[in-house]
Image (cartoon, rainbow, N blue to C red; front, side):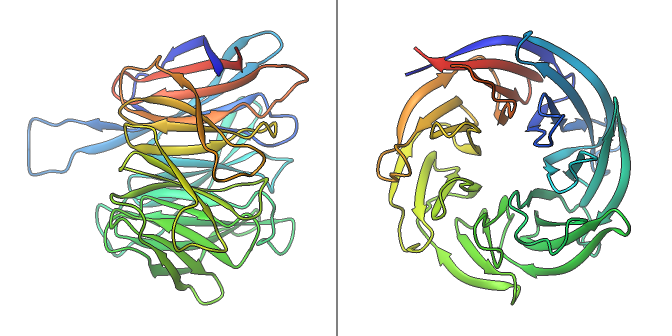
Length: 351
């Protein structure tokens, strides 16, 4: 079993729902936290409530156990964030927000600088950009100065964008992916032609980026598909999370049914693989806790619950591993929850 020990807590003031640790060399101690806050209005109930947000950038020094807030920036409400690893000399953060935009910010010393913004589907009002992904292996990007970004939205569409320092964000294509909200999307880490998406219609789809259309549908889930992870260390390993509370593993070559599944309770919102090849999965189980699942060397049949983190008292949404992995028995995670607007940094070690 794994022991999870709280090291720091922080009040984010707004409801917190996203955590992303920076993968860029020289910035591995930094992580971003995104928030989503409804601004209630009692004057006119016919006017939709405004959704506001805030991005925090923190520095966590693992050797000193210090957590420092570097900066904060007011934005539209945030649904998802990803650092773009392509631009290692300038850490760039892509943000999906509640007004249907993807925004790119650069981290310069202790400031977030807006660099580009794109409305992904401007023909719809009240559209939410729900999730985004970029490819750590850079097999999609054709040169070192561009990054491809996959986006899913609240109308069920999937978009493929390109970002360059010269031209900013550009939309390459958009196509219908799901009949309801497309809660999650992911690029296949090992095949640049394939993308994945999951929706409130309970379907997990595989899309061919050469055709911009669905080529396979999996119907294993009995509620909305909310999270997908193409594992960065094992070529054929795909993990999915769902409102039906099950973490499932698939061999992406044979998608007829999952290889295994484990019921973690609470509904799953985020799935993150550990950065130290210890075969650990960090799972945000919305209405229960944050859980740790272990599997043996790519053995998809052997998913085991090995740790639970119950520090949060509200919806468990954001979670990620610290990418500054020293020669230590400890790993570190950051987690955040919604209505209690709580951010935690904790250590993870074997008991």
